[in-house]
Length: 304
Image (cartoon, rainbow, N blue to C red):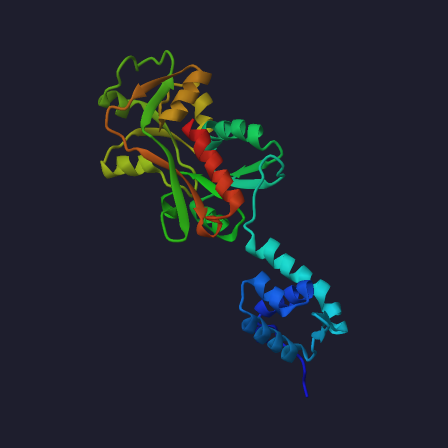
């Protein structure tokens, strides 16, 4: 006869009854400790005896003394129940002040310049041993990295992630402006549409990402005099400051360039689209304590 038992044959609640009996050595006291009726506790004990093929607890005077088999099982059952309680039923916590976690963020170069310093300022204050890895990825790779768990969070204008499986939170919005070097020979004061279209433009077209301003201008059938295409926004600073080219960039990046170089800002001579910048994460991590903490830190840092 095959006496091998399978886990799916076992009601694990019976182990709770076993532990109570081992602790109290009385059906009455075990029932009180478990908030069960005495008949229910006795029935559970009978099922245990049948399952394990041993009396387990035998009447001796006023107590139910454990058999050798019960004495052997008691430490294992106690440890098993403690593990279930501590590791399965208890919500895991994330303690930023002592964590050495490395988080992987996906963000374009513009976010590394504008967004990351604000995040790091707060991070160094509340989580000094946490580290951040930031990479830029095409839109398809971004979705795959979040789905696989290779990345924790993505920040930016990522319309492809507005879909099932991903969760989002808006961080801020910005409009576009035009930048040119100080002392530009033809641009002074307010920029007219004629001047904007005639000026030589540098445009940034990051590979694998949405180009909102280009889509907007194409839809309006507005053609600029584009003489230079770049793949990184940060290349614009030296290009614009050392030439007569102009560029159309988000307002916050224009402010950064103007503060760190000889660059002036012009309002566009047309109503530009607004870029909605979000943080995105996969729904698997929606309740993960570490990810929840990171998202809150990013949101608070950018709100400040």
